[in-house]
Length: 152
Image 1 (cartoon, rainbow, N blue to C red):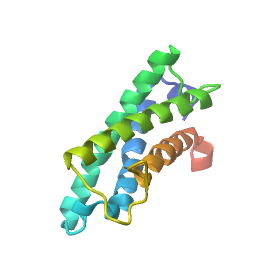
Image 2: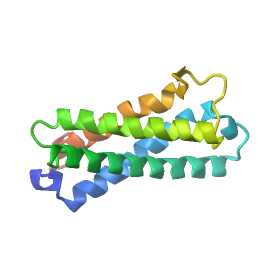
Image 3: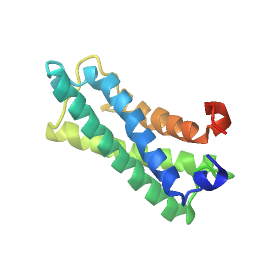
């Protein structure tokens, strides 16, 4: 992508960011699903659909956290100079949203963990790690220059 394509105002950038966010969260959701009790005996197609819907919810969390970061910092930030600090804030806000959703879902019985889910303060460790690894991976993928992908 050219610097124009990678600017925070570019429609192509935002579409790519949304696609990568959903894709990477989907892969994570599928991978961690065995740690959720209700996923154990679910038919594969339903399992895939549940994980896809979860990845769309993850996109909504990422967008809400991005909006909060923009408001707090009073600037857009992806892929611009000095973007690590805003990215860390975005990931922290995303994780806070994720923790709140996990706590609500567990308390309401929306989902339960299997005995093999590692937890930290009652929240699944895998969903917590998700909000570090997936946003970081998304930002790194978006940083790749076309010349590294074989483009011009």
